Image (cartoon, rainbow over all chains, first blue to last red; front, side, top):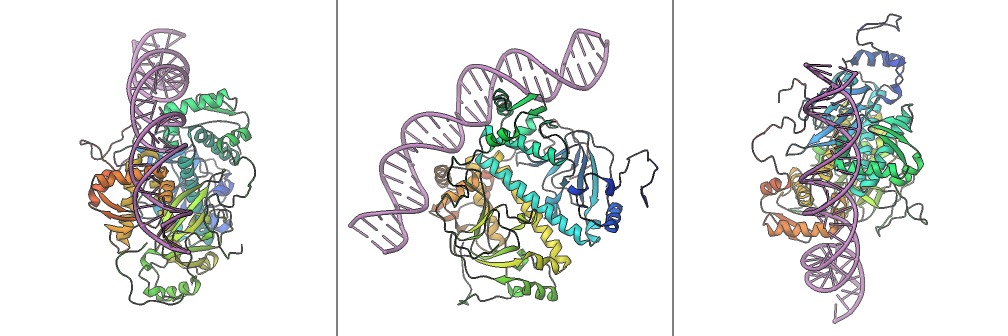
Length: 265
Length: 265
DNA sequence: CGCCGTCTTGACGGGAGTCAATTATGGTGG
DNA sequence: CCACCATAATTGACTCCCGTCAAGACGGCG
């Protein structure tokens, strides 16, 4: 499946869309590439036949050699506890890159599974590096940094928010992500089950259900199974993350630790 | 974070130790460098005067331009909740690299603070990249991947473990890290307060205290304030992460999701 | 010696987990 | 087309782990 230039020929099978026409490009590894680099990148990248729901792309312990970008559909990644329960660490939407965590030890520390019919771009890691592209290198670091920050936020959610706030935060997160993708932030449906939501938020599914009911009864959202309609995103945001009552806007430190730095931004 | 023996040389001032003689090199960015690269790297890197306990190196929202490696001492990083409470995301020991999360958006999403008198190496990020060193690039990706996996594990801890297991896991983690650094895994003292431990593990300090007592009463550890002595690391490990009762050793999936992969462990 | 911050220990209550029953839904085959 | 079933989701009742409140112990240091 090659193409020197954008052809008028419509291919029957995996319908390879050129990276330079892909509306997700600004999210993916190829975001900042110039034309020639993009061709190299496109040469490295491959499409895959669609994954059905429940299909795993890699599993905890697998040797790492490939990164994946979600083209359509959605995925979850999860780690396993010693007693075999799964802990979902993240959900991945179109444009998101999966597998970066395995760059550490060369072995996947998590598993990745499709939540619905999903198309991926596959990107062999060593071939990617051998491109020696500065912009790719930079982008890889960007995306890895993002993943760390996203996880830090999730740790904060698990560590500090109660059940109400967790579900609200979850919905706000998806609203924002859908909006960034050009979809409606107020109307979307979730591809994951209540069990997955609960697992991700560390709540029992009954609790998830109850919190959905609570948000519905407060007229913040409408819920029909996995179809979500947000009445006021801003109210929901407030609900998810209540701020300090009034006074201090730039929190100078709530505790008493010193802050003596000679840093000039 | 001290233990065992010190070096014979007592240095007066910043006493710049050459990277090539640094016993922490294998942990840091310069791990895989050849001689000439190492010189370039050393040229980029700088030492800093020691930080006192409580001093912040960067804060949430600061512009990102520098990475830091812990040389001696220890640090914590934390994010802030909207209402100003801090959530500790990680503790950093000698050899650990701090600041990678900020590669994502060019702005720090967390703050970093010294837990005790601490010496850092500072590494200007852009100068580092301009070295165009393949081994440095690779190492950056490695370390970023590690950070992601570490956070995934912490998410799993917060999501799935109860109070007993959390503290035990915490101690095991530090035992392993000290051992990797060449210190005793069975005897060490913690540089952080009960409050910091509780914050990190998402437990009230009273609960931390109670769990310490429980581990002590079970003869798994001895505790004297921040001085920890582990009687049986393996028992503690078992306690931290109980496995499946018997039967299934390679968990085929506890839930009912499909697993259509041609994987052989 | 006395103050203060850190830590420990006890008593109590609440938020969310667990158990259980009911309803809704979507897929499948007669 | 509908009956049937398995899965998913909701709702209620009860329980328990851990957070909160409160008091006291232990050092460290001026």
